[in-house]
Image 1 (tube, one colour):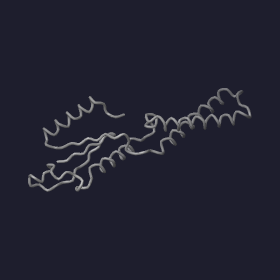
Image 2 (cartoon, helix red, strand yellow; image 1 turned 45 degrees about the vertical axis):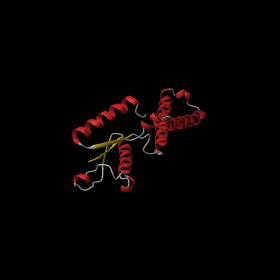
Image 3 (spheres, helix red, strand yellow; image 1 turned 180 degrees about the vertical axis):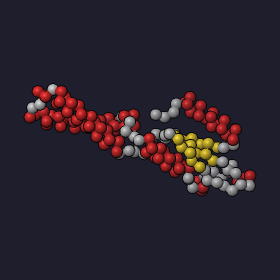
Image 4 (cartoon, rainbow, N blue to C red; image 1 turned 90 degrees about the horizontal axis):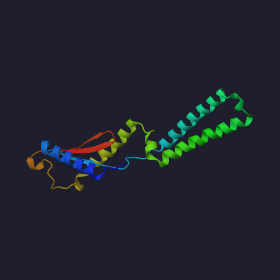
Length: 156
Protein backbone atom coordinates (compact mmCIF):
# COMPACT_ATOMS: atom_id res chain seq x y z
CA UNK A 1 0.00 0.00 0.00
CA UNK A 2 1.64 3.19 -1.19
CA UNK A 3 1.18 6.60 0.43
CA UNK A 4 -1.65 8.89 -0.61
CA UNK A 5 -1.29 12.52 -1.64
CA UNK A 6 -2.08 13.90 1.84
CA UNK A 7 0.38 11.50 3.47
CA UNK A 8 3.10 12.52 1.00
CA UNK A 9 2.43 16.21 1.73
CA UNK A 10 2.61 15.55 5.48
CA UNK A 11 5.89 13.68 5.03
CA UNK A 12 7.32 16.51 2.91
CA UNK A 13 6.35 18.97 5.64
CA UNK A 14 8.09 16.89 8.32
CA UNK A 15 11.21 16.58 6.17
CA UNK A 16 11.26 20.36 5.64
CA UNK A 17 10.95 20.90 9.42
CA UNK A 18 13.85 18.54 10.14
CA UNK A 19 15.98 20.24 7.49
CA UNK A 20 15.15 23.73 8.81
CA UNK A 21 15.87 22.76 12.41
CA UNK A 22 19.05 20.72 11.90
CA UNK A 23 20.39 21.37 8.41
CA UNK A 24 20.25 17.65 7.72
CA UNK A 25 18.94 16.50 4.36
CA UNK A 26 16.49 13.64 4.71
CA UNK A 27 15.50 11.64 1.66
CA UNK A 28 12.60 9.24 2.03
CA UNK A 29 11.96 6.52 -0.51
CA UNK A 30 8.80 4.49 -0.79
CA UNK A 31 8.99 1.21 -2.59
CA UNK A 32 6.34 -1.34 -3.41
CA UNK A 33 8.36 -4.36 -2.39
CA UNK A 34 12.00 -4.72 -1.30
CA UNK A 35 12.27 -8.40 -2.17
CA UNK A 36 10.34 -11.46 -3.20
CA UNK A 37 9.73 -14.03 -0.51
CA UNK A 38 9.43 -17.47 -2.10
CA UNK A 39 9.07 -19.17 1.27
CA UNK A 40 5.81 -17.45 2.25
CA UNK A 41 3.48 -19.67 0.17
CA UNK A 42 5.21 -22.74 1.63
CA UNK A 43 4.72 -21.44 5.15
CA UNK A 44 1.05 -20.81 4.37
CA UNK A 45 0.75 -24.32 2.91
CA UNK A 46 2.30 -25.88 6.00
CA UNK A 47 0.03 -23.97 8.35
CA UNK A 48 -3.05 -24.80 6.26
CA UNK A 49 -2.21 -28.52 6.30
CA UNK A 50 -1.42 -28.51 10.02
CA UNK A 51 -4.61 -26.74 11.04
CA UNK A 52 -6.74 -28.91 8.78
CA UNK A 53 -5.06 -32.06 10.12
CA UNK A 54 -5.88 -30.92 13.64
CA UNK A 55 -9.50 -30.38 12.61
CA UNK A 56 -9.74 -33.76 10.84
CA UNK A 57 -8.26 -35.62 13.81
CA UNK A 58 -10.54 -33.73 16.19
CA UNK A 59 -13.61 -34.69 14.17
CA UNK A 60 -12.38 -38.31 14.09
CA UNK A 61 -12.04 -38.38 17.87
CA UNK A 62 -15.35 -36.64 18.57
CA UNK A 63 -17.39 -38.58 15.99
CA UNK A 64 -15.75 -42.04 15.63
CA UNK A 65 -18.66 -43.46 13.64
CA UNK A 66 -17.58 -41.29 10.71
CA UNK A 67 -14.40 -43.39 10.38
CA UNK A 68 -14.56 -45.52 7.22
CA UNK A 69 -11.86 -46.94 4.97
CA UNK A 70 -12.48 -44.10 2.55
CA UNK A 71 -12.28 -41.42 5.25
CA UNK A 72 -8.49 -41.71 5.52
CA UNK A 73 -8.07 -40.90 1.83
CA UNK A 74 -10.66 -38.15 2.07
CA UNK A 75 -8.88 -36.68 5.10
CA UNK A 76 -5.58 -36.55 3.21
CA UNK A 77 -7.21 -34.85 0.23
CA UNK A 78 -8.94 -32.30 2.47
CA UNK A 79 -5.65 -31.47 4.25
CA UNK A 80 -3.69 -31.05 1.02
CA UNK A 81 -6.48 -28.97 -0.56
CA UNK A 82 -6.56 -26.66 2.45
CA UNK A 83 -2.78 -26.25 2.26
CA UNK A 84 -2.95 -25.53 -1.47
CA UNK A 85 -5.67 -22.95 -0.89
CA UNK A 86 -3.59 -21.23 1.78
CA UNK A 87 -0.57 -21.17 -0.56
CA UNK A 88 -2.64 -19.66 -3.38
CA UNK A 89 -3.99 -17.03 -1.01
CA UNK A 90 -0.41 -16.15 -0.03
CA UNK A 91 0.55 -15.80 -3.69
CA UNK A 92 -2.38 -13.66 -4.82
CA UNK A 93 -3.22 -11.67 -1.66
CA UNK A 94 -0.15 -9.80 -0.35
CA UNK A 95 -1.83 -8.91 2.96
CA UNK A 96 -2.33 -12.62 3.67
CA UNK A 97 1.28 -13.39 2.71
CA UNK A 98 2.54 -10.71 5.13
CA UNK A 99 1.06 -12.72 7.98
CA UNK A 100 3.84 -15.26 7.36
CA UNK A 101 6.64 -12.70 6.97
CA UNK A 102 8.84 -12.44 10.04
CA UNK A 103 9.52 -8.83 11.08
CA UNK A 104 13.29 -9.34 11.36
CA UNK A 105 13.46 -10.68 7.80
CA UNK A 106 11.50 -7.72 6.53
CA UNK A 107 13.73 -5.30 8.45
CA UNK A 108 16.83 -6.91 6.95
CA UNK A 109 15.49 -6.67 3.39
CA UNK A 110 14.41 -3.03 3.79
CA UNK A 111 17.82 -2.26 5.30
CA UNK A 112 19.63 -3.79 2.35
CA UNK A 113 17.45 -1.81 -0.04
CA UNK A 114 18.14 1.44 1.85
CA UNK A 115 21.89 0.79 1.95
CA UNK A 116 21.94 0.16 -1.80
CA UNK A 117 19.93 3.32 -2.44
CA UNK A 118 22.33 5.61 -0.56
CA UNK A 119 25.58 4.04 -1.72
CA UNK A 120 25.26 5.14 -5.35
CA UNK A 121 28.57 6.01 -7.02
CA UNK A 122 29.69 9.61 -6.50
CA UNK A 123 29.95 10.09 -10.27
CA UNK A 124 26.19 9.69 -10.56
CA UNK A 125 25.46 12.26 -7.88
CA UNK A 126 25.09 15.98 -8.53
CA UNK A 127 28.52 17.61 -7.94
CA UNK A 128 26.91 21.02 -7.37
CA UNK A 129 24.83 19.84 -4.43
CA UNK A 130 25.83 21.22 -1.03
CA UNK A 131 27.44 18.36 0.88
CA UNK A 132 29.78 20.15 3.21
CA UNK A 133 32.63 20.54 0.73
CA UNK A 134 31.87 24.24 0.32
CA UNK A 135 32.31 24.61 4.09
CA UNK A 136 35.81 23.16 4.01
CA UNK A 137 34.63 19.81 5.40
CA UNK A 138 35.52 16.55 3.68
CA UNK A 139 32.76 14.77 1.79
CA UNK A 140 31.15 12.05 3.86
CA UNK A 141 29.13 9.15 2.61
CA UNK A 142 25.44 9.36 3.44
CA UNK A 143 24.16 7.13 6.22
CA UNK A 144 21.03 5.05 5.95
CA UNK A 145 18.55 4.70 8.75
CA UNK A 146 15.64 2.39 8.39
CA UNK A 147 12.77 1.57 10.64
CA UNK A 148 9.88 -0.81 10.61
CA UNK A 149 9.41 -1.44 6.88
CA UNK A 150 10.42 2.11 5.98
CA UNK A 151 13.76 3.51 4.86
CA UNK A 152 15.29 6.97 4.98
CA UNK A 153 18.70 8.26 3.86
CA UNK A 154 20.24 11.03 5.90
CA UNK A 155 23.07 13.16 4.54
CA UNK A 156 24.84 15.90 6.48
